[in-house]
Amino acid sequence: MIILGIESTADETAICLLKNGTEILDAKIASSLELHKKTKGIVPEISARAHLESIFPMLIDMQKTFDFKLVDKFAVAVGPGLHGSLIVGVEVAKFLSYCYHKPLVPVNHLQAHLFANFITENKPELPAIGLVVSGGHTDLVIIDNSLNIKLLGSTRDDAAGEAFDKVARILLDANYPGGPEIDKVFFENRDKYNKKILARPMLHSKDHEFSFSGLKTSVNQMLKTYDKIEIAVDFQRSVVEVLLKKTLRAYKQFGAKSVVVGGGVSANGLLREEFLNKFKNSVYFPPKGLSLDNAVNIASAAYYLPSRVDLEKIKTVSGLTVEETLGM
Ligand code: KG4
Ligand code: ZN
Image (tube, rainbow, N blue to C red; front, side, top):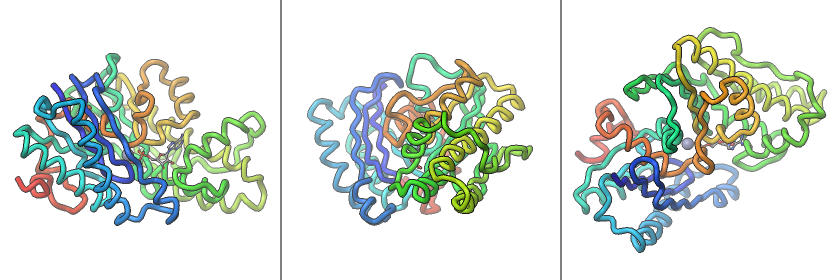
């Protein structure tokens, strides 16, 4: 089973060939991040154009070493994401599927982040609690024995990654993505600073929801009293503590057998350390390079969920169902 995956939800244009759900035959990725640095944030129009410019040369390059006639399925991220960017990936995927007479599997980008954990031989045991922590989302889900995914709770305001990005800009004057900058500063200074400065938002709430926007406000207030680096260290501790405690609560409540983490923030060093301490070998992180947006996640999700995608229910960012977007 060879799946050609396409990802174009935000600033990464990515394509890959995944064999039998585990073997990456090829994976290409182009990022328009540098373009967005100039504008200090993603301009949707620029992102969409960048996808259009990258995707065809990447596919042509891939075709030089692999005959697309051998592809069994095409898979594409259909959202959530930027409208113009999504259209590029979806239209190209439709075209390929039409030309090669092979099925097209629409994939939810957030679910795909979790399926990054399924490409190794050592698979997470089910039922599992899934934690998606990306630049735009913070979701706790339960994945049942049949791989159905149910949302337990989300952030009420900013996503974890968004909080990292905003706080990194305030404290370190960092460009997007700010998460890796805070992470670096944390490990350079963790031994020096132990003081709890910031709140741990919604730590004790009994639901599965999060809230990170208040942290940004507290960070601004603490600037009068504390050193920027000291605040950054405690900020990382605060976010990780909340994510860990809430994941643990859901894990116990649902009698889950494992925890799978996905999305850009799953690359965070302290998060990995603390989750590994708590869940030992029951916690799964994406293999190197698959935490951030990529096409392998998309192909992996399509490998596991080929017939389970409920086209009626998944709406793309345009508000249309996938069937409508794909013109089916
Ligand atoms: O999943 P992703 O690549 O894109 C979205 O779907 O949003 O996640 C990007 C987010 C950014 O907010 C970035 O700051 C954050 O992931 N991130 C990190 C780290 N690496 C990336 N946050 C904390 N620590 C990191 N090491
Ligand atoms: Zn993502």
